[in-house]
Length: 284
Image 1 (cartoon, rainbow, N blue to C red):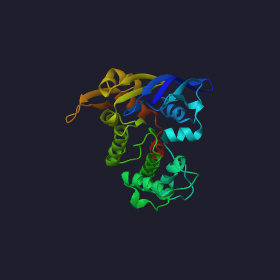
Image 2: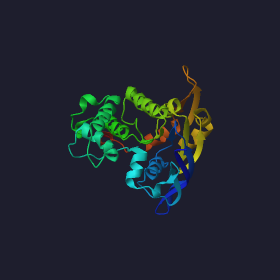
Image 3: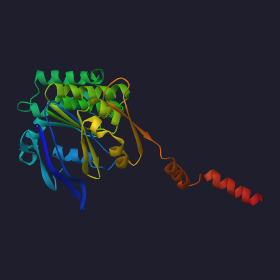
Image 4: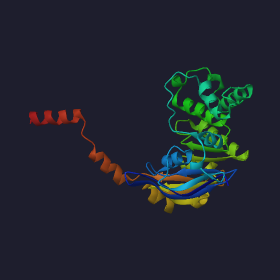
């Protein structure tokens, strides 16, 4: 077992953001976490990345508690793709990807193999032609792909990916998840946060549903992606159908027309409408 999460909790000002979450992740597996905004998905990944300290419970990485691993040991065991990479300085795309090799450097010195791995990582996300571009000048999707290259260059057995497809177009969304499956096929494991339930259905071995900090469902896509599970969690009507070309579910959400009408009525009237109303009133 690569990752073992035991009753993990995290609180802010007494509010449980993550509440008693337990699950395990094996070598060769892709698991996807889904759930509404504020469910605790990114916070849970922050706990597993070692960025946050749990209020209770623990996470074991290859049988050792994260709290017992040094920062270097953690970096060699897991690589993290965060939602935002705060790179304001004009590092090139290549230099950002090369940062993934830092935990593997010998005496802090870059070797030819480090550069070869970095180039391969950039090529795998189709960003090698942009290697010389300043990172801040890249589009959001391009920055995500370079950040993914950094994670791949780290060559850690566990990848923690926080919304790896959020800024990507359709082709590159599939490309990112193909890479996740490739890492698992090579004996690693991936834990990813996604909002796209259909991408999760297509690529995940297991899906975990977080709601109000709790893991309310965990299992195969067919076991988890069911209307009676998703409807109460997301607060919408959900329809699930078989995919026409694969043995995976397809999830559709239906609009709540009453809620849409209520939202429309709550909007402030545009200035021009109020001005028009005033003109009509004066003319009468």
